[in-house]
Image (cartoon, rainbow, N blue to C red; front, side):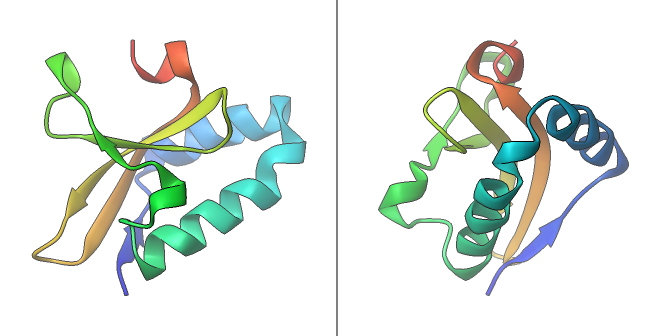
Length: 91
């Protein structure tokens, strides 16, 4: 089981995101629950990022929205970094 860490900046970003998209809360809860169990499940579409976000990963919330995160396998810890549309998250 992985520990989910939510820094203050992510919580602020999530608050704004869910104000605009309250219907995605159940989907977010499901994705975070699945991340906790096993972040390498195929349906999460976990993929490594490159460029200025090298070292980070992203998972799909829906087709249009993503969650970026860092994944520390040795410590079994997942740090959520950002949530938003494809273009917002990869800026």
